[in-house]
Amino acid sequence: MEVLKKPTLSFWQIFNMNVGFLGIQYSFGLQQTAINPIFLYLGAPEEMLPILNIAGPVTGLVVQPIIGAMSDKTWSPRWGRRKPYFLIGAIIGSLCLFAFPSSPVLWFAVGLLWILDVGNNMAMEPYRAFVGDKLPEKQLSLGYQMQSLFVGAGILLANGSIVLFQYLLGDESIEVAGEIPQWLYYSFYIGGILSIATILWSVLKTPEIPPSDGELAEINHSKSLALGKRIAEPFTEIAKAIKEMPSFMWKVGAVYLFQWYALFIYWQYITPLFKLTMGYSTSEAASQSAQMSLTYNIVTMVVALALVPLTLKYGGKKIYALSLVGTGLALFAIPFITDAYLVLAPMVLFGIGWAAMMGIPYTMVSKVVPQDRRGVYMGILNMMIVIPMGIETLTFGPIYKYLLGGSAINAILFAGVFFIISAVLAMRLNISKK
Picture 1: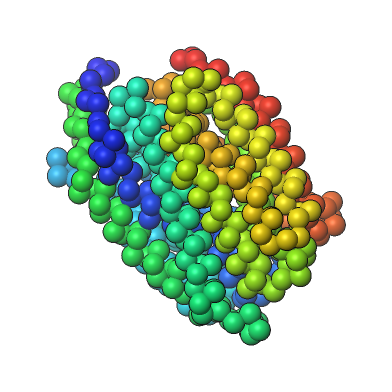
Picture 2: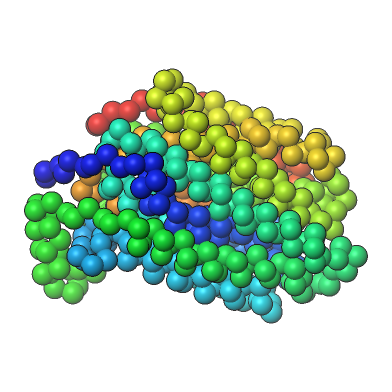
């Protein structure tokens, strides 16, 4: 397969192509901070939070690699290769965000989460491949760290809106069981608008690179297949890609197993933690959780691009491993701080870690996978994210209840240990083409 020579892009061209990530990550920020409090408002017991969040892992496991494989075999002179998929995903996500705060009962909210995750996963994976498609190797680090910046910005806006509306409109003295407070509605409405608007910005501002003659012939061959074979082709391509996957990606999978298991614990149990350590109501704890996310995403925005020269100088694996250690130390500290302001300090380390997690692995993987199969391999990389999340949703409820004594403090410390293990495994990430 011939390799196209890609032009070097300007800073603002790379900026524009990543703007759509702002809307995707705003939605993700609401999932991190607002969804579990909504489940609690609607009567979910704490030990059920992991299993109620299984939508993310399952839809990610199914949707992302299939959409990745399909986008590899897609080309439209008008719409491009990746853009049709993340545009449709953004529309689905937007509709769900408008509907979510009106959920009348728990099962309705859980069902909406499933649909929302389908939309977000449909948008996320082609976007990762889109950046790799456009940039020459020397700019991959800047491209993916720019995505990391927008990850921070999107989640920052989501959590900032939660804190703002809770401050302006919330009444902590009134918390009605079975009802979602009205101050939470507005953050979801903003997300519904951003989901579409930011994706459209990137779609309209950034043309895709046409496929090479060899790639186009492969795409046309795929279109000529019978319907049954076309439906089966993405699954065949995923299986083939996993069989031929570079050994480097298996090592990334080992890191991700512990890293994402730990992150899912943090997002699920940070609100229950503050109810325990600070005696907060659900509303107050949700607001404090949003402030934590607000803080670490500010740090992520500040340090995301600064990591580019550091990774070039010291190597991606060292910066990545060090950032994971810092995230683990942050989680060891949080349960023992009972001051609402001092507890924000560990989020500096968490934010540095989050910036590294959202950029460095994608840069490293982009360098070792075939250009014409980047979509399917980015989907497989995201499978390595959702599989640990799925394992967590199925296993951590019993661990929390029976092994950790139903204590959110122990849950956060458990997550800290997993981050340290992931840091040790990250030191094995030596880039190889095999």
